[in-house]
Image 1 (cartoon, one colour):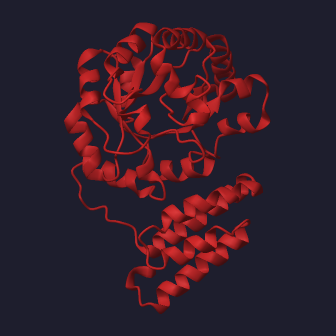
Image 2: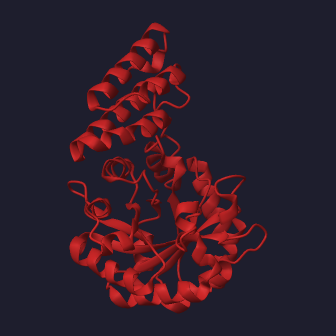
Length: 332
């Protein structure tokens, strides 16, 4: 068993890298809720190369963060290797793994030859993996998709490429890049990749509940899973999955009050990290209150918030509406 296989034995359920989402505040809340490892947002190797301060801030650690995974993106092998080496030096013993993004389907990434575009150029993808592996001492993994074009599955060959290039593991999202996030993730492709290689395979896609996580493990025999959209506004999903894996069905859904109070804490953590970053809370707040009575009015209020005080006032107003409407679970 390799060292990374041993690592995954104790890190079965991780927070996926999500652009604009996996910042220090969100990672902290998910780790506290039971995510065994959290990845940063994807970081531009080119941005780091040009000493972009905003890009470099994406690898900031939250206070007490013992380990973190960092995902980088780009298509120039030497730049990717150079910046992976910088990240390893910068984070020292806090860096658990470098992940290479080869799956982001959005136009501003894939359109420049990065992310999912590398699925179409496996020769270049292999060079990138090989050079990054040679540049750092920590494990190197990559995250990709079922394939680029619909009905053209390439992830099995891509997994073989990753193994050949020295990757410690590969994470596979069960959709084609052209699907974006529509339709249903095909977990069968994850199982096919798992059967084709010796390195660990990590499953990703459509994990929105503890039962989904159990089903993904059962359907694919994957070594670990990455939770992405299922954690948005719902860090509790990690404690629920961990309980389910342990055979304990005792973790219930959070009450509306717990949702609002977690959102309030999230906003406070964002504001402490960087006052201007609190505007990011608009989307997070909307995710937290999804399904809560009065959510529509709350979302309208969130969209005008630009300070921590604004958000606190919006949260207070939502709790007041819940109380007036007789929502019994609004408060503990």
